[in-house]
Length: 142
Image (spheres, rainbow, N blue to C red):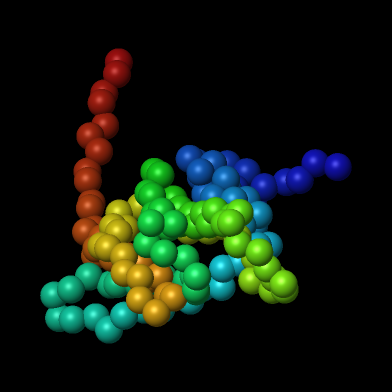
């Protein structure tokens, strides 16, 4: 059975990337680790809209975390190595790895990141879009 795309309408041109982004978001939504919040920060008079993504990364050090921006995708990775020298009588806290991705809209900028008390916060800004109206000349062909 083939899946019909809502973007296959003839009036919707060039929306292939949006469809791919929705597919990626649907796949990423199934993984619940690490938990995260996304909050809108108070906007100043001249400041652009800002969002803060906060991930619960207790047990990870700054060196074990990596944040990259690959095209419009913000990727946050955490890697903990097993300490073979330790002998556990009970092990309830596993060394884990994770990768969490967020697809950013065009024009969004990553302002910075902060790790404090087991919470990794990444601030992003959405600059105000400027409305552009352009007149298209019609060429006469005889």
